[in-house]
Length: 96
Image (cartoon, rainbow, N blue to C red; front, top):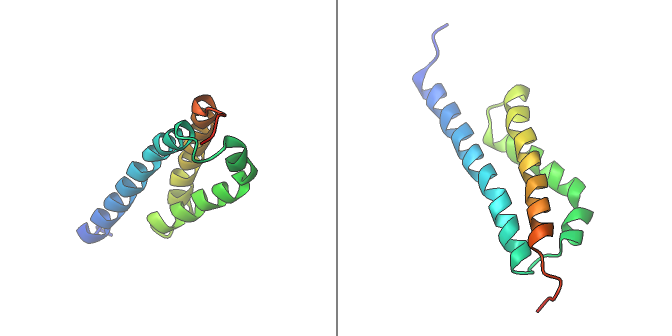
């Protein structure tokens, strides 16, 4: 039962790519709130769809086991919530 190098590299790259994308989410949401492109109340109204998107992205970016999906989805969801808080703090209600 030796691990194949190709499978390990694919796993490492997939997890690394997922983590890199995940940590950009709060920054992206901060910019959206700061530029008034989205109202935080609108994003809050679609929270359940965003949670589904977090789990769907985790399912695509990780291998086929459930544990890897949860390991990526939960922090992604937490980063979404952090981004929502940052979006609320940076949003200026005087839209364009």
